[in-house]
Image (cartoon, rainbow, N blue to C red; front, side, top):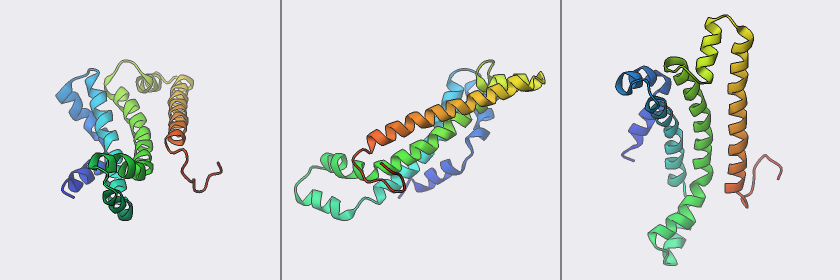
Length: 166
């Protein structure tokens, strides 16, 4: 695939190192963390989507073609459902990356947010409040993971599960 080297480069680049570059290019504003979070989070989804689409059952595709499904219908009814578990797995990884990048960008360049509060309390040697910020960041991560787990269960309903009781 032609875009595979670009995707591999994006996956291999730690997005946290882009924060100083984003600050220089975009300044300290709302666009900077959005750019960093989007850049760092998109690659697992793209990588897993490419892998999921590449591993669609050829027999299913050929059967859909044989019964006369149009290209858009083959995508909708064969390719997307077959690739969806891998796409969602990439999105789940991206969720964790996005949380790390959110807190990291707040550490570097903001005067508000969980990351900023953690850094501020650490500089003031206010350990209990610093740990409260860490616990809050963990709670946000747990909440997002739980919500995404519910969404994944809904999106993949009716599929057999492996290693998990229904």
